[in-house]
Image (cartoon, rainbow, N blue to C red; front, side, top):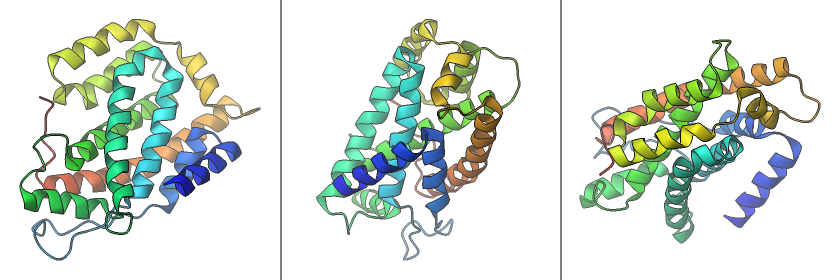
Length: 229
């Protein structure tokens, strides 16, 4: 994973988090298993390493929002580390995220305790939150940053969170930066807002179908309705 981290640092030196995410997604391929094949031979494929790289980039975007995202950021970080430990324990065996889901399902522990299946579900939902926020900001809806983040949270994460997480998030909304400050942090040096919004729009066009395929896989493995305890 050290070599992967070095590659990610090199990407980040050449481009912003948005540009790096576009580059990562452009190289990713998702192969979905058949709807009735969660126990069969056609497992499907999602690169564990590439998925983790994408999640790290989302983590960096949330860092730019500031303290408001502390609870979500910590949750994402823990889930990334859980998958990273599994991957690094045997990179060749654990290179396919769908194989990991299949193994945990066959052992009957996918939903018990701190599993990789649970980590994958919550990281996917965090990506959904990031997608919703990008869609909100790259459009001209006239919402301020607090409104945009709250709406995106309500539509993506809140339905699956318990009351403690929801309450913590609502308190943290008061620390939200304004949208211009956040957009300034996302820009590359000398990049204008139109160019940034165009890149955000392109990232949305890549991330939306990617997450649609991931959700198809979660449904096959009966993980799509998983709630926090």
